[in-house]
Length: 495
Image (tube, rainbow, N blue to C red; front, side, top):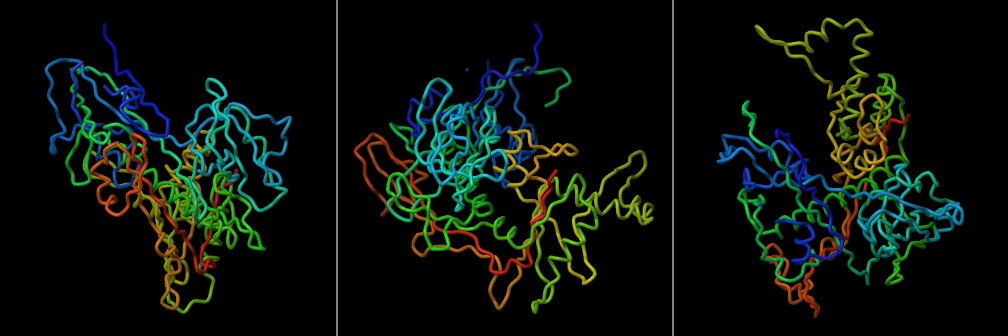
């Protein structure tokens, strides 16, 4: 019987909060003949440094072609990381204004994927809460979470439209008190398995037990360019990338939470210590210069925005402005300029740049990625990962919040003009860190062996536990700051 490519096993999460040999059993990592031992990442390696194209198999020049003896073959795959979960229930009758007066409220989710202490973003892309304690299982496919609304306004509450069954909330960076905080946990996803057959057309972190030394029959890439069969290397890669992802998005999306009298309302449930959060790039820029556009970005709106950005006194000469944007905004930017070019009778000149080719072939396509104003200032587009494939974009996709014309997540239709100039010898955009606390690593050492990848962090940082487990702990104390926001602007598509 003939059959086409089909999925044999889907990779899934184990959310126990620790890893040991039983974790591998639950992930069902376990043999049809394998096409090749190297793990194929279906959506890239969750980092711009490891794009999908570099991980695609079949590159003969680098040994990507593998011959097998039979017709059928299998290969192991890793799906795209998931950081969101689905609401299954909320009691709107007893609590029509969830989060009001800074009170906690319960939301029921499909799984325990979301992690205590982490922030969560609602489907509306605006409302943010903190997960205040570990979820409690209330039945099959029903986990109760305790949320608190991130706000200094006692009258604010979470719109009920965000809590309808089927809506998705996405995690953000965890926030903790300055001292006496407790650790949380991390998720790990396992690989799935795919099956195919050759056709004749020839289109070619708590860890336990001995997990630190566990070898699997999958090869994982290493930073040095080689490969390893140690599972912990892959698990730590996931952990490190997720950590960087959450931190990066936090620098953009964090919102200031201290009252005018200096009080911090949100406090940790374990230590009762206050939880500070600084203003991120979005909040700082939106408070100074923010505007929206509709279905199309017009050239006049673009001109007005750019004039607003550059229309200020400056003794630094030309300002260093970078337009961070998503693919959707880049498309809108290009469309606005081309529409203006066509409207002013420059179709022939534009056509010569759009269509190229030689004998027997034509090439169509060219895109505007810069804008120069009347003063000689130049705006250059730079793609921002979080707008296209980050947590905000993941949330939009999961909730079907797509632009009807481009079918891209609405987050992708955002442009952020950032002034990176130097004023009086000081860079305008800075990372602010707490001395001695910027990046602290500690190891809880139990009976479980420490992975070699933790070794640089071990010496002088060992703290002990009598359990058969060890854990890797890391604490950051830093945030982003813009010294002068007048040369910054946020332009967002709102339909």
